[in-house]
Structure formats: C-alpha cells, structure tokens
Amino acid sequence: MDQINTFIDWAMVLVIWLVQLVVYPGFRRIEKSRFVAWHSRYLKVMGYIVAPLMIGQLGFALWNAFTVRQGISAETHYLGLVALIWIVTFRIVVPIHVNLQDRGKELELVRQLVLANWPRTVLWSIIVFV
Image 1 (tube, rainbow, N blue to C red):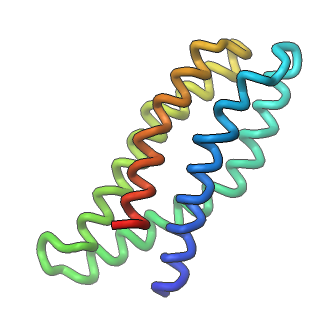
Image 2 (image 1 turned 120 degrees about the horizontal axis):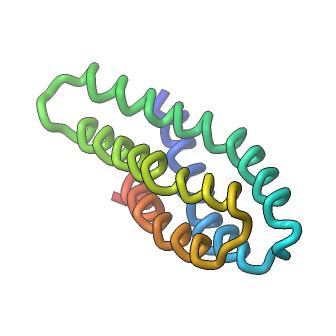
C-alpha cells in the first residue's frame, strides 16, 4: 500500500510542476478564439488524470492518520498538507478555471491562475521531498 501512496505522491508532484511551469503559462499563447474549446478539453483530460490521484491521496492520508492514532504524527502532518491542497484547489484554483471557461481568455485570469497554483506546487513538493 505504501508503494501506491508513494506513486500517487510522485505522480502529483510531477503533474503539478509540469502544469505550473509549462501548461498554465502556455495559456497565454492560445488564440483567444480557440481558448474556451481548448480549456474545456484541458479540464476534461486533466480531470481524468488528477481527480483519481487526488482522491487516492486523500484516502491514504485519512486512512494513515486515523489508523496510526499516535496523536500528532507524520501521518497527521501529511493529512494536513493534503487538506491544504484540497482547500487551495477548490476555493481558489477551480473558481479561476470557472472564470476562464465562462469569460474566455483573459490574461489577468491566467496570471492569477499561475500565482494561485504556486501554493499547491509547494505543498505537493513538500509532501514528496520532506
């Protein structure tokens, strides 16, 4: 089970760095007339990749935190990091994607997305490297 959890953590850190350094900045280069269709496809494909990984990671975090039961432990810190990622994702990043989908390509929204994604990039990196 630990190998699956480690695989998920590494998969997420690789995906988030790729998104942070290549995909989100690349939104600036997509033609405005094609942006909404491209973004819609991106969200669908990334949802198939990222949703199972995030759900799996949360499942492992909850399982480990509540089966170890040693008070504050590495498992509870891991759960806290995963919870922060979910909060940032659904309170900040997802609403920006909704705005991009509704309003189309707006460079200010792309800028906000890149900035808002840094906390997730750092948190997933901490999970893997600390």
